[in-house]
Length: 231
Image 1 (cartoon, rainbow, N blue to C red):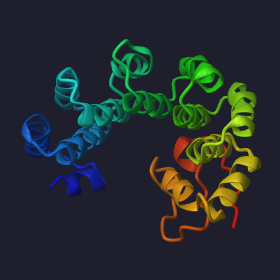
Image 2: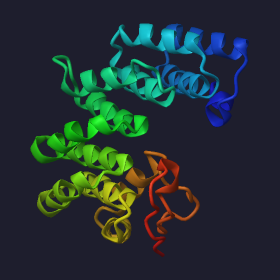
Image 3: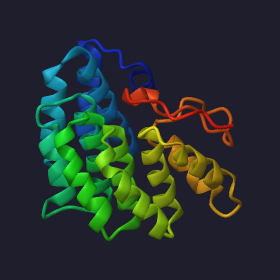
């Protein structure tokens, strides 16, 4: 139902009102989640404060299946509250793994350099391997080489295919060929290629989705130096 607006981010007043109604009242969590992302895209393009206000209000309901998408939507919208909401999702007393991951990706989307120490600390000290990987990917989106050493250390010590593929994405986003090389290795490995391929696609960082065994140039959407394309 919300597919058109998700795909192009277009809006008029009626579209936003409809999406807000579905976000707040639809019992299908998938529909509500996609409406949240749609509202974030709309607000990010036309600075629509109504969409941001409704996303912030609905976030307070703490619906676990929708909340992570609302955190991401506010980051996509570049809402003034988005940074603090992302930090609360990562470090707050009511944090959960899904919202922590969303908070990390939100920090990467926001591209605020003050998030670098937060993500660096989680890469170094986090207990959940997948969340450490997501922190590495988000840090790569920020393009700060201060996180290079922690990412490399994590990749050498983790046994999680998810953490490895997200960490490799982080390296590639920093313009490091090791990252793209590792992604190709993971994508072609018989034991975890499906995991790695899903992780490459899921953050929306891959530009070529038609060839699942080919690593496309994943860096341009962040504005940082591109990692070399690797066949």
